[in-house]
Amino acid sequence: MKRKNTIIKSMLLSIASLITGFVAIALPFNLFKTLSDEAMQIVFISEIIIYFVIGMIFLAVCEKRKQEKIKNAKRHEERKCKIERVRREWIDIAA
Image 1 (cartoon, rainbow, N blue to C red):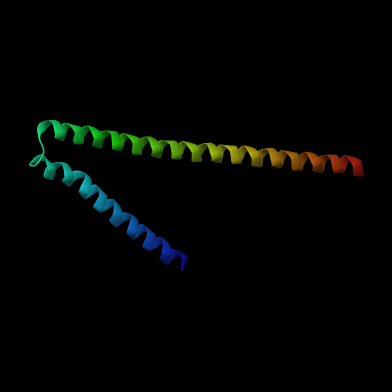
Image 2: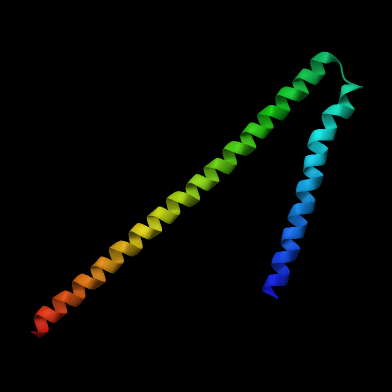
């Protein structure tokens, strides 16, 4: 069941990506015939800005996940060291 849901989600994501990519590429070409030069420059600049913002958001999310992994690994390592220290202390007390 879980695999089926994953496949469906992957297919929907792929279809959405294809549609978005097609619109992002086809829109400027269709507008080229109807808009003036200044309007096309504005559309082009806004499109570049949108791509840049999306890229920065993606990088920020990736960096946040990376920092969370590092933080969790550090926390687990500290916990492991603490457990080992407590075990050694109990062995010393028992001896």
